[in-house]
Length: 545
Image (cartoon, rainbow, N blue to C red; front, side, top):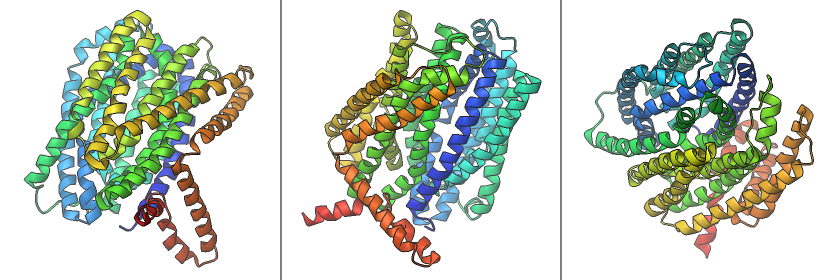
């Protein structure tokens, strides 16, 4: 491979962070004026349609994930003909999927009047708005297969650059509409423009960059590979059902059991958690291709060492983000989003539940990355069904008795099942390690996160609310205090010393390279990385014991 795993992962993280911060800043800026111009009920409708479309996307069956996994091995082996065959299979399948989603989506139109009843103050035609959302989704599938080339080649940075460009253009157009046109239909159509532009740019870039892979294959995909893909698709369908029920029905339940105003209020917290989750996804998506390549080419022991080191940093990041959501969500919404006045926040109890739910959901994802890259779809095929049942039953029942908190507790209840089952599958079918030991470590992270969150909240109570500068002060304290507590709690773990040793190696290497010709420095820089060599020292120690 022309690029090492480290170089690709580092590049992906850098450009993904750039795209993320741009999206967050522009997204909150647009949200503030959207609420001011259209109101909270319109915000609830936007969240509703997004979730309805996500449910329709079940038709995708998890096909993309299964196929990207199938492409890791031939890409690592340089089997270009096999990649062409998979890509062609991907293209044809996604065209069919897009048309099926469009057809099923049209069948929802007769039920649109039920949604209208929950938003009496909204003066728009929901049929037209829904059709715009549906068209935007269908169009995205026609070119989705080209993005897989970027993923398996570990070039997520290209997608991030395209995303930055499209985000800037769409935000400018949205602000123009909010300031001068004030038309909700035009506002929604901007998303369609952004989707078409993004897919067109990705198509053009992959056409030039991977011209040897996008050409028509000499033969069709063999039956054995098709059979394996279909097997994984069946398993991924169950995973998609579970994921959709957990992450895409909460808004629908809130809308139907309460109203658009409640959903609009809740969607502000969803915006915060999804924005913070974007940081998590940057880390995960940037290393996903490298993890897949490592699993395809390295030993189990080396990949287990890699998992422990990555998961150490990842859980630290999740803990810190959960604390930030707990202590900063309410003051942030009051200062940044509440331009028109009114109460847009929940009480401390609800905010704590949202933060805890975020922690429980996100702690799973590193395990999910390794399960996915190893192709352990079929082994956990029934888990999502139980996950979906638990989520729906608990959410609906508790919502009737304790209100909105019941919906969040339902999501947390389903997350507990996943937290136990997913590492069990990874350890049983790949690492052959102890799952209880992993869960004990995870419980320790949870306890430390709760303690750190409580201490941080207590300190921030001495800072009054009401201004941008006090919000900045709270952000500054939250950036430092929780990490000090986490450092004291996690520094004893062996992974901490290994990362410190790696950092020293990197600094020493860069210092030596600064005294060498630039060409030599660039050539040798990538071999010192947590993805390629940080585990080698640990393995060497085991060999000498």
